[in-house]
Structures are given as structure tokens and as C-alpha cells.
Image 1 (cartoon, rainbow, N blue to C red):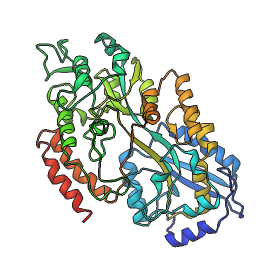
Image 2 (cartoon, rainbow, N blue to C red; image 1 turned 120 degrees about the vertical axis):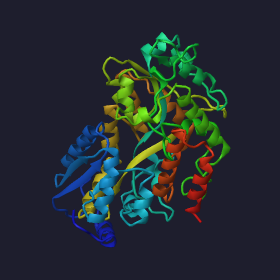
Image 3 (tube, helix red, strand yellow; image 1 turned 90 degrees about the horizontal axis):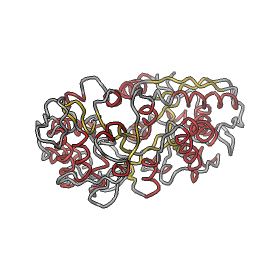
Length: 449
């Protein structure tokens, strides 16, 4: 992709006319053939978006979408390099924690005027999702494409062997003092190499065959599938407000006691330590090999767990916390247009199609991979999961019962993440106690003056 000044690109985008109602309509102004470079990071979702790209091309023969997939870490590094070198894609899947910085650096094209001009109906999306892609200055940078929540995935055979029933798994509760019935279940599901369970005399925490609960990492500043559901059900919030906070709460006693409890599971031998987690075997593979009895996971990975051989899984909702409620982050993705695009009209047409029923309801929902952002498409996705033998109510119950919490959207997120990554790794490795969060929080709040 060639360099293009952001202002010039924006002007070009504003001058092109797009169809007014249906996503994917051919622009009213004459448009020549164009290839749209589109990047994403999720291999599981690539086929469904290739299907959307094929449908988009059929409706807009002058446009062809070329999809490139990178792994999560390589994705953001390559994208950042692309912005500098002028090789960034025309359109890319974006994350709420990343786009504010890109927007502030002038790397993205706003779509505020295009949404208004083309009368895009933002009410079709799950409540709150569309608002997440608007910056402090009122500019919109994306249309919601999906949403995700967190639940517990467990090995049905191991749960049955432990004498636990699905009804019990669905009503677990936790607290930071003794872990509640949730910790009792985790302990009982943990088995050492001699067959002793975690709650039995003689349990050897240094030689564990199956951990009651898996771990994906420390969660750095986000903790989406690692600790956010516990901290928020303990009455904690990331910051003073969301979006665009000015003060973070990582030193809050409620957060400290939550993290102290989480890391205590490692110390007791109920959850793997960081050496095991960073050994090169990911959480999904470890679960598939029988090393973890249950894991806390995002809805986007559900189908991957169900595809594991020789493992039958089921879902349970996140545990009820001290607030008397469950909790889950409510995260969602959208697509951003690069300010360097040579094809702003084509890029907008593709973004609009990705946010439309033609893609989300007619294609994505039927694949049972993610929950589309459009309300009617979400219903179809639930049915598609059900048809595949997966009851996803433990994920969707958060939306139905109002126990979702918006993912943090903040300036300086790269710096916040760097500080919390170092601090949380030290705490999870037992090199520091939770009071290390005091300095981390002070450093983070110092970014905001």
C-alpha cells in the first residue's frame, strides 16, 4: 500500500457516494476496480469472513477483498510497523484497547459522516456496542461486528468423576476469603499423580496430573479471561469512568484481594504456575490433553474446545461474587480503515458490509463461531450453536441479566499494559505481593497528569 495523507484520504472518502441503506451497495459514484487488503488475527473466523468477502464481491464486482491472517502478537507488531512504512492494510479488525491510540496518531479514517450520510441504523446492534467506537472528539471509527463474554468450560468426564453435577456447576459462588463453593470445586477437581484430590489429605501440589482450573496468563492490565470476572463481581471497576478514564483503580483493596485469591490457587497447586503456562503449550491444548479440568474462556473460542478430540465439554456461567451477581467483560470488535488507504471508497463499502445483516446475519451467525453484534443475528447464532450441540446460555446470560461490564477504553493503553504486565508477572511469580500494585497504579495515573 502506498502512502496517502490522512486529510487527503478523508476528503476522498467524503466525496464518494455510497448506497444509502443496505451494506455492500455499490457506490453511487463511478468506481474503478480495487483490491481491498483486509487483515484479521483469528484463524477460526477467517473462513466466515472469506464467505462475507465473496458475497461482497458478488454485490460489488469492482471490489475484491484480499484477506491476510496473523497471530495475535504478530498482528499488532506488523500493523504498527505497517503504519510507519506505509504497508498497513486498507481495513483491519480492531480492538477496543488499541484503536484509541491509532486514532490519536492519525492512523485511522473516521467514518462519522459516512454513517450519517448512508443512514446506517446503529440501533440494530446490541446496546452500547456502537458507542464504544466513538472517540472523545465525537468521531466514529468503526461499526460493531461481534461481541463476547466469558464463561467456564469444563471437562464433563472429569466433573462427573469428581461427583459434581451440572446443576452445581451452574450455581457456584466465590469470595476472596475462602474462595467459596467455586474454590471447593476447583480443589476437588485437582488430582495429583498419585490420584489424590486437592481437598484430600496427602495431596502433592508439586506433582499435579490435572489442575482444577487452567490459566492462560497473568492478564496484564485487562485480565479478560483470567481475573476480570472475579474482580468485577467483587464490586471493582477498572477506573473512575469508562470510556476515557483519568484515574485507574488497580490499587483498590477489592482488586488486591481478588488477585491475592487468584494467585493463592497457584500456591495451593490447584492452578498451574507461570513456568507451566509459558512452557509453550497453550491453554486449549493443555485442556485437550486432560491437564485442566476446567478453564475460564471467551465465547470466541467455544467451537475450538468442542472440536478437541476425546474431550466432551460443557459450559457453566462465571461464579456469583460477593456482590451477589456474576460478571463478565462485554467486549466487541469492529473494523478500522487505515488513513493510508489508496481506496477509501472501497474500504468504506467493505466496512459497511461487514457491519450489515448481509454479513452478520446471513453468514457469520450461521457459522456458530462468534456472537454477531446485530441483535437479530445474535439470536440466529445462539440457534446455530444449539444445532451444533452447544448450549451457550452461560455466555449470553450476562447480556440478558445485565451483568456485563464494558471493556476499558483508554488513552495510553500501551503504557498501561506495559506497567501492568511487569507488575502482574512479578505477583503471579510470587516475586512481589499485591502491594506492588500501589506503585503500578501511581505510575499509570501519572500518565493522566
